[in-house]
Length: 166
Image 1: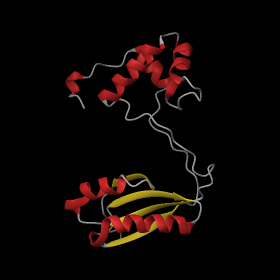
Image 2: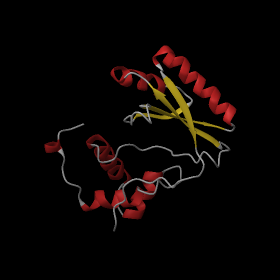
Image 3: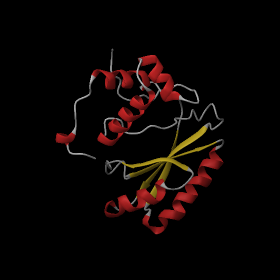
């Protein structure tokens, strides 16, 4: 990522692009063209500006966010692991590369009640499927894992990022 001195402030067109996309891209074959038409700018300008904002870290990522429940995945489990802190980066990358893991990250421990520091989300149609995926993670971690648990979702929370008002 560029140093803060390299960051140009957002101009009005950048802000309008963020506002037009913060709830998601239009579900069309050419979403950037749809945004451009809505804003009265060229599609190439929308794409260039969004790439610049990605490069600068203003936008973290552009990607699909599936509704797992709508797809039939009702047993969603956050697997939590107690692994050595000095290996967390290496292990997190290995676990995060597993096809069955939708996201993986580190969180602080809260000893003695909460010894877990590595979190990996898996989705399944049944708890048995989630447990099978957790065993795949356990195979990757091997003896490095000192403990684990699975926290199952009990309700759907609306997930949104930062919103810029009009």
